[in-house]
Amino acid sequence: MTQENEKPLIELNKVVKNYTTEAGVFPALKGIDLHIQRGEFLGIIGKSGAGKSTLLNMFTGVDQITSGEVIIHANGKSVTLHEMSENELALWRGRTMGVIYQSFQLLPMLTLVQNVMMPMDMSGLYHPRKSRERALELLEMVELSEHAHKLPTYISGGQQQRVAIARALANDPPLLVADEPTGSLDSVTADHIFQLFENLVESGRTVVMVTHDKGLMPRFSRHVEIVDGELIAPSPSGRRLGWGQEGIK
Image 1 (tube, one colour):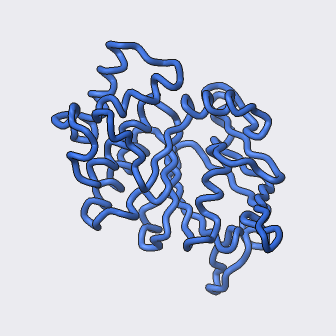
Image 2 (spheres, rainbow, N blue to C red; image 1 turned 90 degrees about the vertical axis):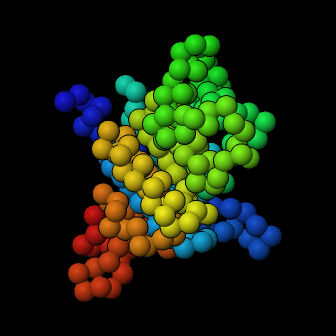
């Protein structure tokens, strides 16, 4: 086993995120410690406003931390996110992780295959023939190859989410992060999307998914719950404890 593989894929150490509002400083994250291992299907579960999407933004580098550190060990490198410039971070993120949003964020003027190829172009990995072949392979993986040349408005919401997953896989990243990816889908379609994530984990990916749905807890390989910017876990007696308290790892 290599030294990199002995380390967690993601380390969050004492991560604090404060927002300044008219009412004063709002602490969105309060000293988060979290290690995410390779091959995990991790669920981050919490109500609206609990801080789960903010937590996701910390290890995607979309937002800056107030204090603490976020370290990613991937592709043979250990990267401390808050020490990178915006340009370095954007390029690194494009090659290291795929991000999937509830709102899909497909470009409406591009066909499905063009949408899937877009991350390759943005990361400097575009090749006219190979990129198109890979995009078509990914659309076939999510069972949408027959729609490859359609615009997003001509397919359903569940199909658009599958295109978004294919796009997130374009650069073969070791990490996928998904922010409420099933929140706007019906239960049957949401289950199909969840099964797709499970298949990706079985193939060796690491998937981190944010959700408000506690019913999904048993389907994750591990889950953490966030309340008011803090990670919590149930004690043996059923009483909730902070993750920093005795008895909680």
